[in-house]
Length: 156
Image (tube, rainbow, N blue to C red; front, side, top):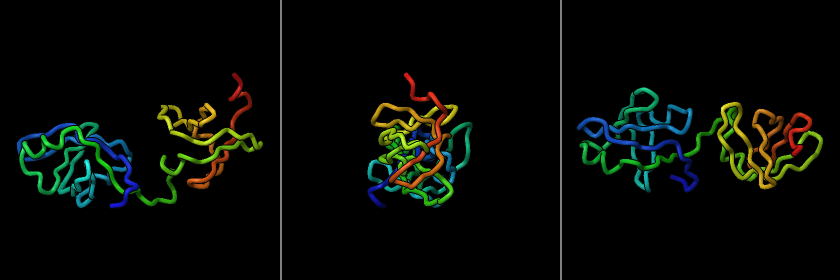
């Protein structure tokens, strides 16, 4: 596993007596809990033996976790995984550190975080600007973002 692991979910609690666990994904990629997937929890690799959807979560069985006690030892742990290479997706880790400019050449700063927002995720920059990701027009992963924002969006 590389040191560039991404948070993909969290183990909430055991489910039943045979080592199953309730997992909440923080990603839209359900394949993170597909059979054979490898996740990391506090430096320990966990291989998915099986999983099934359960309400807005997943019930996951990891190889070698065969009792409620073993499952309880994993309670509350964050789950990390390798980045997925998909050229059609924009990943948060590729946005952080990018410089943001408008199509008119206005420097908006550097992305420090991406804030979840129901209408559109927001690029948060070191200059204090919040820019809806839906305004992105060009993207060079890890380097630069060009946005086409409506007039007045930065007026205070």
